[in-house]
Image (cartoon, rainbow, N blue to C red):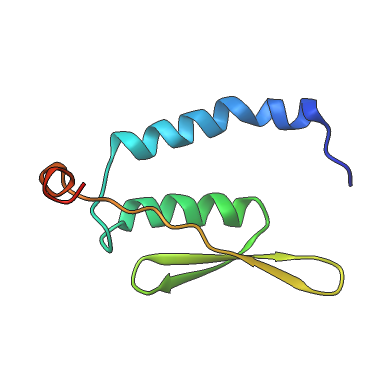
Length: 88
């Protein structure tokens, strides 16, 4: 299956809404319960194998290809505003 630019462009509004939702509900590092659940659900709905609870709230998605697997890991860190000022 080949993906066209138009197919990708069709995803843009949903991806923007997803990102905005995550930013409206910030969570501190290692306590990202809501974020992890939303990302895991989105990956699962996209047909990606998801392993949950990696290092606590981390996720690993497995992209299955014809003969091998490709793993990807995404990490989002949250810090309180006062920590950003203390530790730039």
